[in-house]
Amino acid sequence: MPKFTRLRFNLEKLKDPTVKEDFQAMTGGKFAATSAVLLNGNRGDWFHTTVGVRQGCILSPTLFNIFVERIMNDALEDHEGTVSIGGRTITNLRFVDDIDGLAGNEEELASLVEHLDKASSAFGMEISAEKTKLMANNPQGITIEIKINGIKLDPVKTFKYLVSTISDEGSRPEILARIAQTTTMLTKLQSIWRDKNIRLRFKIHQMCSLGLSVFLYACESWTLTKTVEHYL
Image 1: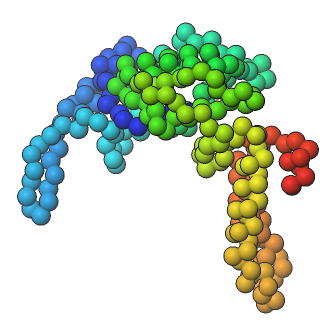
Image 2: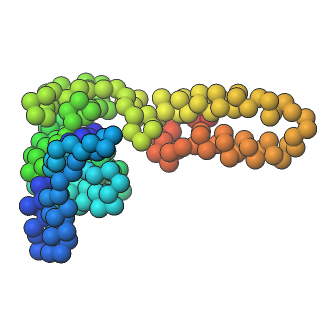
Image 3: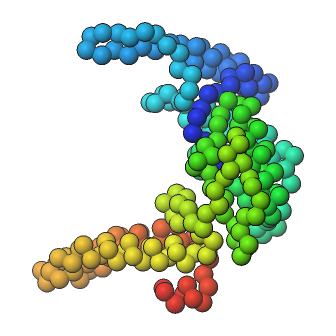
């Protein structure tokens, strides 16, 4: 799961017929500007912002999305994926700067990571090797070395993705974690459940709005087996 951490936009990549010239000029002018720190009435030296997006800048999210889309298009141009769902080839899942690459075998995964790394570098962006993990859903696990910038990526059995627990065991760890979180949350509301002055209808409403929302978070992605169904 590659994670972008350092951003140093290569604005030359925006010089493309598909990108309007006025947008190119506006973006170039904005990033050519300088900044200074004002502290206790004293202004520091002027400097260029060369790394990262500008906090609070309404242009930054759009610019970031443009670059990520370009990176993914370039990285996948010559990549042949073998994972399919419903007859549709799926090579990646992504949300903002979190990208989950999918591959049918180790060699395909290594190729996907290499293509992403090269495309990212060309656009002035960098993937964090420390935050990028590998996972296999076979008993052998990952048997080859896959690297980013010379750093070996660590294989893991579980990792967090958008608050959910992704595991090589399937959905079992995530469901057990959801049950534990829901139980803890409901236990904290014992005073409400035991209060005879509070209507049953209100208690049921609280149970549904608070308990079920915690328990069923991202349940659309669960893979149910007979063992897992037993917990439910």
